[in-house]
Amino acid sequence: MSNREHKSGFISIIGRPNVGKSTFLNRVIGQKIAIMSDKPQTTRNKVQGVYTQEDAQMIFIDTPGIHKPKHKLGDFMMKVAQNTLREVDLILFMVNADEGYGRGDEFIIEKLKEVKTPVFLVVNKIDQLQPDELLPIIEQYREFYPFKEIVPISALEGNNVDRLLEQIKLLLPEGPQYYPADQVTDHPERFIVSELIREKVLHLTREEIPHSIAVVIDKMSKDDNKDVIHVMATIVVERDSQKGIVIGKQGKLLKEVGKRARLDIENLLGSKVFLELWVKVQKDWRNKSIHLKDFGFRD
Ligand code: GDP
Ligand code: MG
Ligand code: K
Image (tube, rainbow, N blue to C red):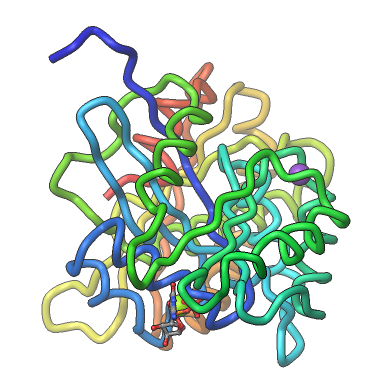
């Protein structure tokens, strides 16, 4: 072991369909992840892959809601997508060198402008180009957004992918290894379930509860011989006063949170759900490493 610092962070890959996002992830993370990426429920926000080096860990987050929806996308999905973009350390905006700037890109760039997160432009499929064709494409995109880095790659053939990973590492903050080195994916639905519950709390408490509350999914599975998915979740607040607000008079508010969240979770999972909610006070949970390890992304 060297005594270089350890870096880690969350990275969202966005881009129009077919630009090569999955191909890139498969190349970086290896074959195991491909098993996950084509499940029907993957239109939701989740950890897509974890890439671990000795001195760095990159956690790639899928944010599919961010490409221009073909059908009307729920406000909620858009909000989740946008929150994700806000919370990650880096956004990779992947485009297809072969096609150049298009209308779907416009929509994404609008979203990028709404967040402060740094963005790399990843120009993929350069194997399809003549060398002199690359610069005009880059210039096209550069007009619309001040990218932190611009990295041309071929995800399919592997050109320049290592360089991109180096650039990512340079940008990531110092941080712990969140996942064991051999773990490449996370449970996809847990994060969205916690966001659904969090949304109900925020909605029903209006301004009284800060957006920074966390929801921990303690359990999400079928009990023996039952057709119902049993979800146990803890709403974590920072102060006793907030606990009182979230529970409400005679537990009324929490009950309403549970009722609304359960309906959404049933829709999400396509199954009957038994939802149990707890509220817990934990001071200073917002410290980032604790938050990410023990709350949103726990396995
Ligand atoms: P996604 O929808 O963004 O996840 O795109 P995919 O990874 O599914 O890729 C869409 C298509 O583009 C597939 O047929 C890939 O083989 C192809 N593709 C991805 N990356 C490259 C690349 O670097 N070069 C070329 N020529 N094709 C690529
Ligand atoms: Mg894909
Ligand atoms: K930005």
